[in-house]
Image 1 (cartoon, rainbow over the protein chains, first blue to last red):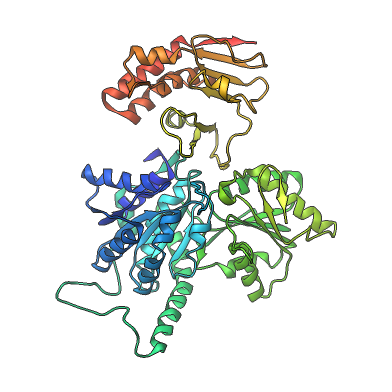
Image 2: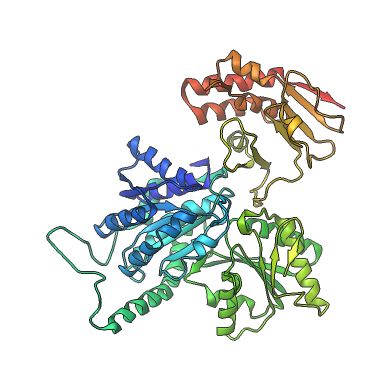
Length: 397
Length: 163
C-alpha cells in the first residue's frame, strides 16, 4: 500500500510493522511526531503495545532498555540535545548486548538553539557500540527500522541499533512510501532473540565492577568483533528484504554510477539525493564521477570504500558535522580505512550543511568542480584539504 | 497536493520551513511535483509557482523572490492588486470568504489552506476531483467533506490575469 508519509510517520510505521511491544516517549523537535503517531496507533488498537511516558530522554532510553531486557521488542526516538542527554544510557544498552532499536532524527546541537539538521548528534554516538545508519529517503527509513530489528536481534550481533533520518528534510517531508503488508514483515522478521532475559525470581548481575579488568576489555573487544560480524548480517538482511519487496539499498554502502568513475563523492543522509542529481548533471557535463553513499557509519564499511577508491583519482567527502580541532568524522573514517587498506588517493573534506545550512545539488556541483579543476590543474589542495561551505557559494579554509 | 498528485500517477514531495513560529506568524512551505522520483531536498530557490495564503505578506515579505519569469502566483485575495507588474500569471480567489462561509474557522482564524489547494489545482492543471479525494482521505469524516467543498469552490471561483 503506497501512501504519502513524512519521514517520521514512516519511522512509526516501521516500528508498528516490526510488532514493537513497548514504546517509551519523550518529545523533542523534530522527533516528536514519531512517538505521537505510535501513541495514536496504540490508542486506536491498531498496534498491540504499551507506551511509557517518561520525564526525560535519559529515562526514555532506560525504559526502552528495561523493556528489552525483559524480553520484548522495544523502541524509542529522539534528537539532538535529547540524544546527548541519553548518551550515558547508550553505553549501558550496548554494553548489556540487548537488541533494541531507536530512531534518531538528526538536528544541530546548541548553542545557539537550532532545530535544523546536521549530523553532530548522531556522529557523537559512534563510540558507544551501537549500530548506526542514516537514511536517504522516507522509504529507506521505514525499511531500515524493520531491518535494524533483524540485524540487532541476530546472535552474531546482539547490539542495539540507531536508524537516523535528517530533521525536516526527511522527518517533516511528505512523499510516497510503500507500506509493506504485515505478513511480509512477519515472514522477514523472526521471533525476538536476545542473549538473556531479565525475569522476576531469576536474578542475574550485569555490569558490576569487574574483579579482573581483562573481563572488561574482553567485553569491549567482543562488541568490536560483533560490529565486524554485523557487516555480513547487514548485507544478508538487505538481500533478503530485496527478495521480499524488490528494494535493495546495497547493505552498508550504495555505489551510484561508480563504473569507470575517475573521481568519487562520498556522503551520508538525505542530501545524498542531491548528490545523485549532481552526479547525473556532472556526468552530462563530461566529469567522470561516481558516488558512494554511506548507509552504515557503524560498522564502518572500510572494505567497500577502499575497494571503490582503489582506482580513484580523487575523492571528496561531504561531512554534515565537524570534530573541531580535527576534521569531519566521515572524512576521518574514509581516510583511515583507505590507509589501512593501502589506498593512496587525494581525499578532500567539505564541511557543509552544518547548522542546517541549505545545500542543494547546485552547491554540490560547485564544490566538486572546484576540487576536480584544482586537481587537474595541479593546484590541489586549494587552499586546504578541509574546506568549509557556509552556503550561497561562500567557501572558507 | 502530494496525495492528489500521487493519485494521478505523479511523484511529489512537500515540506515546511519554520522555526519557533506560532499560529499567525509568516511561515514557508515547499512542494515539488514531477513525473519521476524527486531526489533533491533543498529549499526551492526559483519556484514555478508561488502560493500566498495572506495578501498582507506582500507588504512585509518579498514573497515573489526567485519566481521564474512567466511564473504563476496563486493568491488568497479578493483582487489582484498589489501583486506587481512582473511577467507573471496571477490566480486570485477570496479563500478567506470561502472559509468563513463554510465556517472553517479555528480559534478565530479562517482556515484557508484547503480552499487555496483548489486554486492551485487550477493553476497547475491537477484535476479538482483528485484534490477533493485527497482532502477527503486525509482529513476524513465531515471535516474532510467541508474542506473538499472549500477546494472545489475555490477551483470554480478562481480568476486569472495574464500580464
